[in-house]
Length: 278
Image (cartoon, rainbow, N blue to C red; front, side):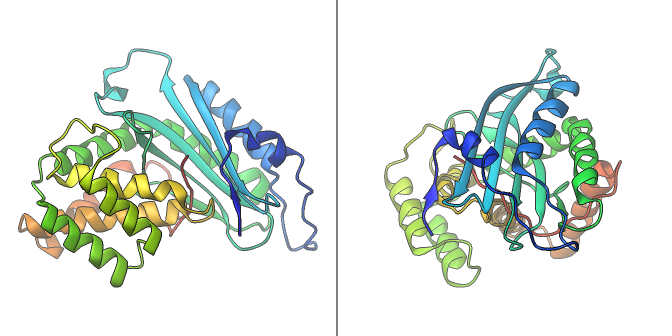
């Protein structure tokens, strides 16, 4: 299926015919999601720096990405490498639920980071068209905590030495056993390892550089699959570096529970999600 990656997709999404799957299916229109997200971002004292929309040829699957910053100079929402990002995915073809997540993006390349702590997914049933806005608002209210978690993970990746040989080994594992890289994407990761497209303010033989090689390759993912793969990759690479550092699975699970407890002001339906980046 051909994917239109132009940021001019906004009008295309808004004008896409709404689906008619019967009374059991609750339509969440792309237009309503766009307007609601933009309004809630502004009401939460953030400004939208830029926005990007992607979809397939019939707009049956679509995603919106918003690069945002707080209107104040809050030091808890500042980082030398990262900015805040909010993204959603919606569909008209019953293949995926409505999903949204607060995350971060890398200034150097606009690669996305989804750590999976507060991902929300909702079937297109019942009051889904009313409930999703509450979840967007709740996630924006958790921005400081989510951002701190992402920064902590970024710093851990930056401080983790990872030779090119080890990077290649992990990439092979992602391709052959984890289904986290397609043939095209692993080729892209190889090319980035040999000649990076961006300066990530980090030595090339670190987990942070490898992380960005992968997320750069993910820019070609279909709109319905970005969040799922990004979240899985984030969890995968953090587990890998914990294992390399000698953190046991029990320790990793313990720290993960602490992070979730710190972030759990609201209850979210957490599962595999999908979004994708420019």
